[in-house]
Length: 384
Image (cartoon, rainbow, N blue to C red):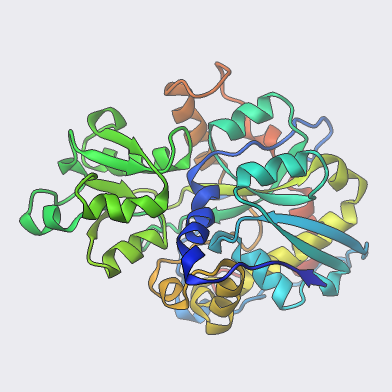
């Protein structure tokens, strides 16, 4: 069974789109330090995406392992209506959870910051959380959550789903050709201390600048197009679909689209006590989740059936999804540990964290459910 409430209406669309990016832009609390958690396996960085067209085999895998026992369970999943959650939406709509004995009740929240405390309190079993200062600081305080799989990672080639745009008049006049031309200019960002600032930093670094070289302005994502059009901003970090919408409306032009390729942005987190009490249910949830991720591999992200599912759960227009760069969810649930470590180090250096030495990322992760799911499905064949 799948239950969800999907708000509609053009009057609410800007707010819905803003919520859809909140997980990626701001760090959210997560992850409990848990003695006895399975060791995290070494993982490779996110593979290139999109892969060759011949790689479309949504559930393609090598030989599956021993059968995973079913443990029927009802799971509440907190979400903000965002395309990065596409693997969960696809799994729910195509019955992948149901065939593993899992019913999913989607709990719509105003932000991931609202959903995460619900998971920690056990009112919701799982949600997504973006990496950032509040994410790491909450872990240091012992919040009852654990990371079980990544939600979204930027592909290692192609265009980033988190571009930087500049005002059209500045680009057309040649005053701004790339990030290196933003020195001293007003640059919009949703929030500081999270992935939004980190991604913008990576873009500025490509032009030889730092965050301190620009006038950083924080404001809601729906306000950025107007601020650019009114010349109150010179540029902005605009995660999709906003980057594409700004270009479609002829307000701005993308000037950085490769700065954060391969970086991991958010994690699927579970309530630790629930996961340990229901290990088979957690693993079966992951079977469904990874099947959804495999359906979205390569050309699958733009498959009309999958796009229709994303639109149903997020209210993001179909045309915008089709025009925007793809997101990426690892089909085997592997973390890009190096990416998370780099982000944590940046936040430490900027003084956002309430501790002095980096926390080993392996302490935040229990990849046991994902590993058991891969044993059930077989490793995904990324070269087929």
